[in-house]
Image (cartoon, rainbow, N blue to C red; front, side):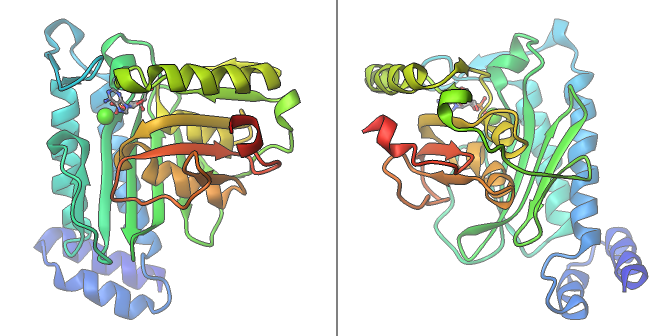
Length: 288
Ligand code: 2AM
Ligand code: CA
């Protein structure tokens, strides 16, 4: 079967025919997204990692977007263009939602890529080495696949629904620590003036309870850090779907939990607050 699906995907790439994607699904039966499709997506993501690492910093263009500290570089746009073109070649029937045209698509049950070409753009622009490429895939409005790649550490996090989470091919799991012994990562909603006070208020409550805290400036790495047992919790008052879709399935498949700050289910087609944790205790009690 692997040989057959490999052959189909090679043909599909060469002929650029969407027919074979449908054929994939039929041939592969219960496996909606075949291993070879996942491998092709990973290849594309890793290739984009090289673009980020080899960025020409002297000639980098940085533009302000709407809001505070909200910037875009020529590399955000370049990487998204590569991702859009290549991912849609791999799964031509999928829809596409990416940060750099800033369009949240209408809710749909169809396969939908949710992509952040560079999560942690400020970190990237300042050369802090804490950014990631994020590719999520929704079906029936829920994530079925998540791939997040931190090129600076050559760390590729991945998860498929019901199949667990992996870091560079090794299974990962959340930690068993409670907040009193754990690390909490705080967002600061610096981009939304009206949310700053609320954010500091929640941050203070969590910091008082935790053994220590961090702020990495990249939602994807914050959430994947919980999935791999490196930290215990993270919150942010407002993120966009491309900031959390891929990482959310990586976290839940690793045994963690992700909800809104009110404890509600996340809508992957809307901006949302985020409470991500290792699911070892009820974090809502510390916040409200
Ligand atoms: P980005 O770098 O892709 O924009 C930083 O704390 C985290 O918040 C990053 O993951 C960043 O994603 C995200 N973020 C969400 N909304 C943002 C905004 N309006 N401006 C800048 N970063 C934002
Ligand atoms: Ca981004």
